[in-house]
Amino acid sequence: MGPSTVCMRHITSRIEKKTGSHVCYSSGGVDSLWRMSSGGAMDRVRSLDGTARDEQTTEAGGPVPATVAWHTDVTGEQVHRPDPRDAFPVAWRRLDDTHFQVRARWPRRHRFFTEVAGRFQDPLLIPETLRQGSMLLAHAAFAVPVEDRFVMQRVRYSTSPARMLLDDSSEDVVADITCGDVRRRGRRLAGMRCAMVLRRKGRVVASADGRLDCVSDRAYRRLRGERPSLTRRPVPLLPGLPPQAVGREDAAAVVLAPSPRPGAWQLRVNTAHPTLFRQPDDHVPGFVLLEAARQAATAFSLFPGRMVVTDMDMVFSRYAELDSPCCIEADALTAGDPDPSTIRVRGLQDDAEVFRCTVTVAASESAVPPLDPCGSRSWPGAERRP
Image (cartoon, rainbow, N blue to C red; front, side):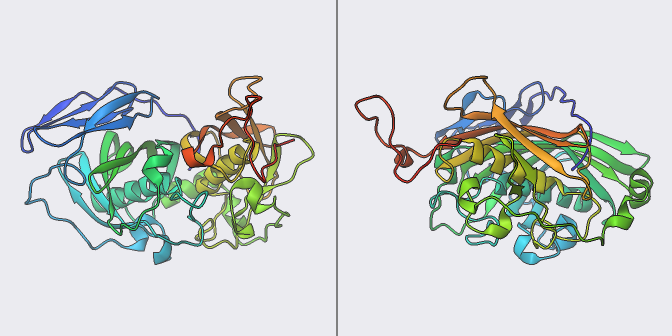
């Protein structure tokens, strides 16, 4: 993940004559996707633009021609996850030139993507599925060489606690991915925007989108100059915040270190973590910054450990370097809000912005106690942030 901002363009609606369904895409990027056909129930979907719409529920992943075969020869190299425990896509298929499906297997137990608040699957599985699915399609469907680098300029997702509840289902999630604004440099793919609607058992779990740029290894080395030579240098591991303060259980997964300033922390870089740093790199991976934004919003919220991050919208401005401190700041999106549900998080390094992110948190209904006679809530064992 890396620099620049993203320009979303209008995508017109089209009729899928083979399936008899109508897929609508709104302007300003793929802010919403809903499907209408002759059967099924209407499913309420929260779009990335913050609105809610009804969606026709169909078979898992939506109706597709029976002749469209799944490709199951997915490798860790194609999703840039050498450890099979971190690689989630297991199959993909092409529906037309720009519309694909990716089948992914979410882990019930994982060393990093652990359950949230004891009841929910980790919402960061959503952007990670988008990231891995997009890279899989870039390699398998658009013939991008496996040694090329990818830069995700922006990533955002939206879900709800109810859609992330853990259950006993072992069924794969199916990602409908539309590749728009495809750019080429000669015959090579230079970049595209990927919009995803994620379903399990025919029900919508989440929506997400992001902009993916492809950079050849030679161009990347020119861009980074001497930075790749720093890959093997040790990075000091700072003492982390208590795991419970950022919604984690494992201290190794904490990516924030204390800071003397309220609402600010220092990025904690654990290059030994096998999921966060899947291979030696010359910069902090974008996923680590995404997790830092999630942990900062959780720590900033009134009741860490009881909150689910339902929405994130993250824009990357530059690389976060390994050899310089990076400050993570959080503040309420609405100034003076005593109980913020939407939090603005920024990453700053060498007086320059690395990323900015808007994070929305929510509590499950069962986690919210009733009001006391004074009109306030009493949270046993919970402490308000300073």
